[in-house]
Image (cartoon, rainbow, N blue to C red; front, side, top):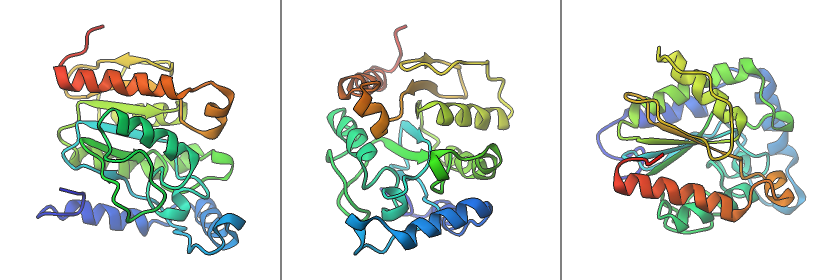
Length: 238
Protein backbone atom coordinates (compact mmCIF):
# COMPACT_ATOMS: atom_id res chain seq x y z
CA UNK A 1 0.00 0.00 0.00
CA UNK A 2 1.25 3.48 -0.83
CA UNK A 3 0.91 6.54 1.34
CA UNK A 4 -2.51 8.08 0.84
CA UNK A 5 -4.22 4.80 -0.06
CA UNK A 6 -6.65 2.84 2.09
CA UNK A 7 -8.95 4.12 4.81
CA UNK A 8 -6.43 6.21 6.75
CA UNK A 9 -7.07 9.77 5.60
CA UNK A 10 -4.45 11.16 7.97
CA UNK A 11 -1.75 10.72 5.33
CA UNK A 12 -3.75 12.67 2.77
CA UNK A 13 -4.47 15.42 5.27
CA UNK A 14 -0.81 15.62 6.21
CA UNK A 15 0.32 15.87 2.58
CA UNK A 16 -2.24 18.59 1.92
CA UNK A 17 -1.09 20.56 4.97
CA UNK A 18 2.55 20.33 3.91
CA UNK A 19 1.95 21.37 0.31
CA UNK A 20 -0.17 24.35 1.38
CA UNK A 21 2.33 25.58 3.99
CA UNK A 22 3.25 29.29 3.89
CA UNK A 23 4.91 29.58 7.31
CA UNK A 24 8.33 30.81 6.18
CA UNK A 25 8.26 33.91 3.93
CA UNK A 26 11.94 33.61 2.97
CA UNK A 27 11.49 30.02 1.79
CA UNK A 28 8.21 30.75 -0.01
CA UNK A 29 9.92 33.51 -1.98
CA UNK A 30 12.99 31.39 -2.75
CA UNK A 31 11.23 28.21 -3.83
CA UNK A 32 8.91 30.18 -6.13
CA UNK A 33 11.79 32.20 -7.58
CA UNK A 34 13.69 29.02 -8.42
CA UNK A 35 10.55 27.55 -9.99
CA UNK A 36 10.07 30.63 -12.16
CA UNK A 37 13.69 31.08 -13.23
CA UNK A 38 14.41 27.37 -13.77
CA UNK A 39 17.67 25.83 -14.90
CA UNK A 40 18.30 25.87 -18.64
CA UNK A 41 18.41 22.07 -18.80
CA UNK A 42 14.88 21.96 -17.36
CA UNK A 43 13.38 24.94 -19.18
CA UNK A 44 10.50 22.82 -20.48
CA UNK A 45 9.55 21.65 -16.98
CA UNK A 46 6.76 23.07 -14.88
CA UNK A 47 8.53 23.19 -11.53
CA UNK A 48 6.76 22.00 -8.40
CA UNK A 49 7.83 25.07 -6.43
CA UNK A 50 5.99 24.10 -3.22
CA UNK A 51 6.81 22.26 0.02
CA UNK A 52 7.60 18.59 -0.56
CA UNK A 53 5.90 15.85 1.49
CA UNK A 54 7.57 12.59 2.42
CA UNK A 55 6.83 9.42 0.49
CA UNK A 56 7.23 5.68 0.72
CA UNK A 57 5.82 2.65 2.46
CA UNK A 58 3.39 3.50 5.32
CA UNK A 59 4.39 0.18 6.94
CA UNK A 60 8.08 1.07 6.75
CA UNK A 61 10.58 -0.27 9.26
CA UNK A 62 13.20 2.21 7.99
CA UNK A 63 12.72 5.98 8.10
CA UNK A 64 15.25 8.05 6.14
CA UNK A 65 15.53 11.74 7.03
CA UNK A 66 17.31 14.18 4.74
CA UNK A 67 17.94 17.93 4.88
CA UNK A 68 15.56 19.64 2.44
CA UNK A 69 14.54 19.62 -1.25
CA UNK A 70 17.17 20.41 -3.87
CA UNK A 71 16.61 23.52 -5.96
CA UNK A 72 16.38 21.64 -9.25
CA UNK A 73 15.65 18.21 -7.80
CA UNK A 74 12.71 17.90 -5.42
CA UNK A 75 11.72 21.55 -5.86
CA UNK A 76 11.29 20.69 -9.53
CA UNK A 77 9.82 17.19 -9.34
CA UNK A 78 7.79 17.41 -6.15
CA UNK A 79 9.19 14.21 -4.63
CA UNK A 80 11.99 13.83 -2.11
CA UNK A 81 15.45 13.12 -3.57
CA UNK A 82 14.01 12.78 -7.07
CA UNK A 83 15.69 14.36 -10.07
CA UNK A 84 19.22 15.19 -8.89
CA UNK A 85 22.55 13.51 -8.18
CA UNK A 86 21.82 13.08 -4.46
CA UNK A 87 18.82 10.97 -5.34
CA UNK A 88 20.79 8.98 -7.91
CA UNK A 89 23.30 8.02 -5.22
CA UNK A 90 20.68 7.33 -2.57
CA UNK A 91 18.29 5.27 -4.69
CA UNK A 92 21.17 3.19 -6.03
CA UNK A 93 22.08 2.15 -2.49
CA UNK A 94 18.45 1.62 -1.50
CA UNK A 95 17.85 -0.59 -4.52
CA UNK A 96 20.93 -2.69 -3.79
CA UNK A 97 19.73 -3.24 -0.21
CA UNK A 98 16.17 -4.06 -1.31
CA UNK A 99 14.50 -0.85 -0.13
CA UNK A 100 13.58 0.42 -3.61
CA UNK A 101 12.36 -1.40 -6.72
CA UNK A 102 14.74 0.48 -9.05
CA UNK A 103 18.10 2.26 -8.73
CA UNK A 104 17.19 5.49 -10.52
CA UNK A 105 14.29 7.91 -10.51
CA UNK A 106 14.01 11.07 -12.57
CA UNK A 107 10.46 12.29 -11.97
CA UNK A 108 7.45 12.01 -9.74
CA UNK A 109 4.79 9.64 -11.03
CA UNK A 110 7.22 7.07 -12.40
CA UNK A 111 7.16 3.47 -11.18
CA UNK A 112 9.56 3.98 -8.28
CA UNK A 113 8.33 2.26 -5.12
CA UNK A 114 10.00 2.14 -1.73
CA UNK A 115 9.81 -1.22 0.01
CA UNK A 116 9.86 -1.12 3.80
CA UNK A 117 11.22 2.44 3.79
CA UNK A 118 9.89 5.98 4.04
CA UNK A 119 11.82 9.04 2.84
CA UNK A 120 11.40 12.52 4.29
CA UNK A 121 13.36 15.59 5.44
CA UNK A 122 13.61 18.04 8.31
CA UNK A 123 12.89 20.89 5.88
CA UNK A 124 10.17 20.83 3.23
CA UNK A 125 11.16 23.84 1.10
CA UNK A 126 14.40 24.44 -0.77
CA UNK A 127 16.51 26.89 1.31
CA UNK A 128 19.02 29.40 -0.07
CA UNK A 129 22.50 27.86 -0.07
CA UNK A 130 20.98 24.67 1.43
CA UNK A 131 20.89 26.40 4.82
CA UNK A 132 17.50 26.65 6.52
CA UNK A 133 17.38 28.79 9.66
CA UNK A 134 16.58 27.33 13.06
CA UNK A 135 13.22 29.12 12.99
CA UNK A 136 12.39 27.57 9.61
CA UNK A 137 13.31 24.10 10.82
CA UNK A 138 11.20 24.64 13.92
CA UNK A 139 8.26 25.60 11.70
CA UNK A 140 8.70 22.35 9.75
CA UNK A 141 9.14 20.07 12.75
CA UNK A 142 5.41 19.35 13.34
CA UNK A 143 5.22 17.72 9.90
CA UNK A 144 8.05 15.32 10.76
CA UNK A 145 6.41 14.53 14.09
CA UNK A 146 3.12 13.76 12.37
CA UNK A 147 4.90 11.40 9.97
CA UNK A 148 6.66 9.68 12.86
CA UNK A 149 3.32 9.21 14.61
CA UNK A 150 1.84 7.56 11.52
CA UNK A 151 4.88 5.34 10.85
CA UNK A 152 4.20 3.00 13.75
CA UNK A 153 6.47 0.15 12.58
CA UNK A 154 9.76 2.04 12.22
CA UNK A 155 12.69 0.30 13.91
CA UNK A 156 15.63 2.22 12.39
CA UNK A 157 15.99 5.90 11.49
CA UNK A 158 18.76 6.87 9.07
CA UNK A 159 19.67 10.57 9.14
CA UNK A 160 21.61 12.06 6.23
CA UNK A 161 23.91 14.86 7.33
CA UNK A 162 24.38 16.88 10.49
CA UNK A 163 21.41 19.23 10.02
CA UNK A 164 19.05 16.26 9.64
CA UNK A 165 20.77 14.59 12.61
CA UNK A 166 20.22 17.58 14.88
CA UNK A 167 16.70 18.15 13.58
CA UNK A 168 15.62 14.60 14.23
CA UNK A 169 17.02 14.63 17.77
CA UNK A 170 15.15 17.86 18.48
CA UNK A 171 11.99 16.21 17.18
CA UNK A 172 12.47 13.35 19.64
CA UNK A 173 13.01 15.78 22.51
CA UNK A 174 9.87 17.59 21.39
CA UNK A 175 8.02 14.36 22.05
CA UNK A 176 9.18 14.51 25.65
CA UNK A 177 11.80 11.77 25.28
CA UNK A 178 15.01 11.94 27.31
CA UNK A 179 17.57 11.97 24.49
CA UNK A 180 21.30 12.05 25.31
CA UNK A 181 23.67 14.52 23.68
CA UNK A 182 25.11 12.80 20.61
CA UNK A 183 27.78 13.95 18.20
CA UNK A 184 27.19 13.46 14.48
CA UNK A 185 29.62 10.89 13.11
CA UNK A 186 29.30 8.96 9.88
CA UNK A 187 28.43 5.37 10.72
CA UNK A 188 27.16 6.16 14.22
CA UNK A 189 24.63 3.59 15.43
CA UNK A 190 22.80 4.42 18.64
CA UNK A 191 20.10 2.36 20.34
CA UNK A 192 17.89 4.53 22.53
CA UNK A 193 15.74 1.69 23.75
CA UNK A 194 11.97 1.78 23.37
CA UNK A 195 10.02 3.76 22.33
CA UNK A 196 12.54 5.49 20.03
CA UNK A 197 13.93 3.50 17.06
CA UNK A 198 17.66 2.93 16.60
CA UNK A 199 19.47 5.90 15.05
CA UNK A 200 22.01 5.65 12.23
CA UNK A 201 24.02 8.63 10.99
CA UNK A 202 25.45 9.01 7.49
CA UNK A 203 26.96 11.78 5.44
CA UNK A 204 24.46 13.37 3.09
CA UNK A 205 24.77 12.00 -0.48
CA UNK A 206 25.20 15.51 -1.89
CA UNK A 207 27.32 16.15 -4.96
CA UNK A 208 29.80 18.00 -2.77
CA UNK A 209 30.30 14.95 -0.55
CA UNK A 210 30.38 12.36 -3.32
CA UNK A 211 32.68 14.30 -5.66
CA UNK A 212 35.21 15.00 -2.91
CA UNK A 213 35.16 11.36 -1.76
CA UNK A 214 33.88 12.23 1.68
CA UNK A 215 31.04 9.80 0.95
CA UNK A 216 31.62 7.02 -1.56
CA UNK A 217 29.03 4.67 -2.98
CA UNK A 218 30.74 1.85 -1.09
CA UNK A 219 30.39 3.73 2.20
CA UNK A 220 26.70 4.35 1.60
CA UNK A 221 26.13 0.76 0.50
CA UNK A 222 27.77 -0.42 3.72
CA UNK A 223 25.37 1.68 5.81
CA UNK A 224 22.35 0.23 4.05
CA UNK A 225 23.76 -3.29 4.18
CA UNK A 226 24.08 -3.05 7.95
CA UNK A 227 20.54 -1.69 8.29
CA UNK A 228 19.19 -4.47 6.12
CA UNK A 229 20.99 -7.10 8.18
CA UNK A 230 19.65 -5.70 11.45
CA UNK A 231 16.08 -5.51 10.17
CA UNK A 232 16.29 -9.03 8.80
CA UNK A 233 17.93 -10.53 11.89
CA UNK A 234 16.04 -8.43 14.40
CA UNK A 235 18.81 -7.12 16.64
CA UNK A 236 21.96 -5.05 16.31
CA UNK A 237 25.26 -6.57 17.33
CA UNK A 238 27.51 -3.81 18.62
